[in-house]
Length: 299
Ligand code: FDA
Image: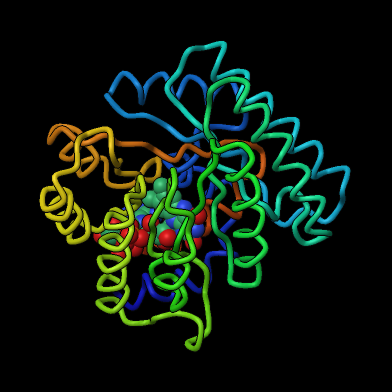
């Protein structure tokens, strides 16, 4: 990473919003559900499935958490009406997890129950470590009662291999990713290669357990290791999927689809695009560098 790009990552919050928006467009389907639905039509035509995500985190008022819940129900109904190949991803802090666990539980249940009626599936994203236990509690309860819900494990967390042991063996559907939040060293592995190693160990453990895994990465090394494990375990096309974020490494996405693997693209939309985009730009200092140069009138 160049010194300029490293500096830029630290100063991203100073870049004017309209410029961030220009560079963030690739990561977000748009402001509205209509735009998100047309993006999913586009992805489906390219041979990819989608998981829709309504942007917004850390809701602090119960009324707002219920509004987001109803928006998610509208998403599930739009998927059904439009006949598009997509499920839904949700973040529990949007449904009141930081207000009261029971509120997030109730809101998540409303969404999962509606998804069950429509024959769809809900993925509960994993957020930072302060939310892990509550997220897994809510996931386990809803999984037991409805079935059509999955959780996420983060390969950088030291607890992940033990969490996989506690996973119900029956019908588990897990997304495995590296993890995006900044965690202290006593909670998370820090080395780049160490996280990769734990990712592969976790993936193998999940396959051994018979879980359906959404292999969520853009890291070609991990995609290759996953393909090798899929082959070793003799898994059929319907027994796992790859997952990638909208706007990231479309070439690798195509390589995997052309290789016969199922691919799901995480497709966020909504008015609260700014925090999400800043996180994505932080992961890609090159694009963040272009954004900063534009802000400084250098490009
Ligand atoms: P890595 O970061 O090493 O990137 C590999 C390659 O991809 C690099 O070349 C890199 O430049 C490129 N790349 C990565 N991000 C990019 C970007 N934004 N723009 C352009 N290039 C980029 N995390 C979490 O904590 N909880 C969750 O619930 C989820 N959910 C989730 C769903 C899906 C479908 C994905 C793909 C990812 C997540 N994540 C997540 C995020 C995940 O934990 C992780 O931070 C990112 O996927 C980056 O990790 P990679 O495995 O891609 O490796």
